[in-house]
Image (tube, rainbow over all chains, first blue to last red; front, top):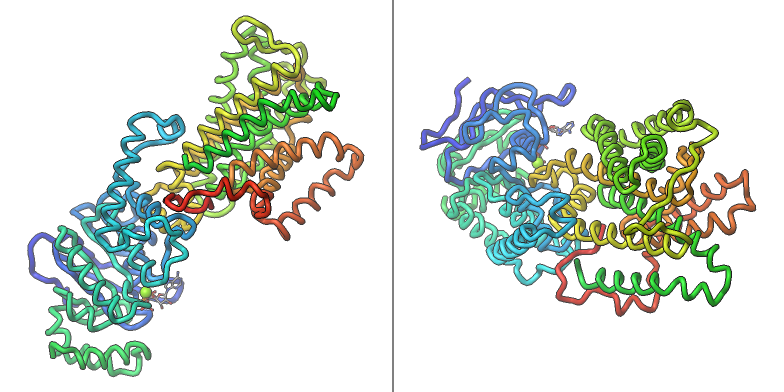
Length: 279
Length: 328
Ligand SMILES: Nc1ncnc2c1ncn2[C@@H]1O[C@H](COP(=O)(O)OP(=O)(O)OP(=O)(O)O)[C@@H](O)[C@H]1O
Ligand SMILES: [Mg+2]
């Protein structure tokens, strides 16, 4: 097979021969790919292509069956998720996974966990160092909420927000961990056009803060607008990779989009791919 | 700690301070104070259990065993080795914490309800040890002549002194637990309970936190056990069996698992119920407890603290500006 590897500076993430199987289902097969630091990398593919499974492997929620994952030069396959988070990787979830009964601010403060340290004794006894840290946590969380535009909602319970804001809050919580690499799993799902535009801006501002972003998304307008590179997954394997314009014109990708195996929602996506203003 | 909790704490402290004067008017002072001493001792145990069940989402069926480890540590060290009771007390807590760590590490590394199973077995083993190690524990006939406590050289005599000592300790433990909950650690625990995989992905070592809460709950149970030992001055294994672990759980659940106030309320209520009225059911006690548990699960799953009609609630409600979510 041909490894589809962008030639760029220092790779922040290196996948080598990655494979995952669920019983008889091959979810990921022999993925070799490198993501250079500092870019917005999109991953697209039909439903069930293995995009979420790939995120679960990278973030440590799932141990890959075969292959290796290197993040910031460390071999992280098999590490517990909290260790990978401490190394500077964070993510959002396709199915919103907020702490629904905590406030918006507290959700973001939880995200600061790997960047703070007070333990049971320090917090139970309210030692001075802990109070200072708590103040810092609160201020940092507030500034992150301002950054994503949820500053006014700090006191609301996370579970009461509309879906669009919950998706943004997931990003804020992930940013609080100070990631070098941020994985976004369908952040535009359930957002209207205006919200999606704002999301695109937000993602670009995040990249501007020296954070590499990997975006899994079905909204082709968003993907084509903001991505530096796109990887197409098809039945758990890379089908093509390249710049947005190269992907749009790739005959294999077009064939895949038109093929019978492509799920309904993606057929709709093809239309938007076709109608993309850049075309 | 949010304003709401501070107010409740203040009210609670005042009510507790005034309680002995109140019962004096009713008569039968020493009896009610005696029940309250036991309720306070159980509160110390149940604050830890509430953190474990309500905030870390884990079930332990060995709290009576940890209570017993504290009780027997104090009993054996003071009777057989003539230790000062105040020195024996932290020893019991450390021992219980250590044992909890040994049981908790393998059980909590696995996802699911392995802790319930592991503690069920562990509790039974501890109970057998209390019964069989006659040389140390006195076995079924018990450990006797346990010395009382002295404060600043003066021996504690009478229920009223014990009442203030035990409830003072409850308040200190309560402040500790409340501080914990409204901090980085407490947020982590609530996060684990609400959305475990997201908590992990945000950098929280979930297994380690569960073990730590379990260790804390065991140490608090042991502290309660030490007070119990010196108060009743006599130990027998019957007070530390599985039934007692279930009673502790029930107390927490009646008050409301996801609130430390619920744990206190439920413990006081169920201690009175158990002491005053349930005696008549004798052998049917298990049945009564089972029915209460079932009734709670069906009609009031969040415990008594979830009742909204209490008039003081408006005053206690968190001001708008607060940024802490509902406790869950
Ligand atoms: N925990 C699991 N157990 C068994 N099979 C799974 C599991 N998770 C995913 N799969 C299977 O693996 C394949 C890839 O699923 P995955 O969720 O990664 O796809 P996806 O690309 O994220 O799809 P979508 O666009 O719908 O989110 C699918 O066939 C799915 O059914
Ligand atoms: Mg998916």
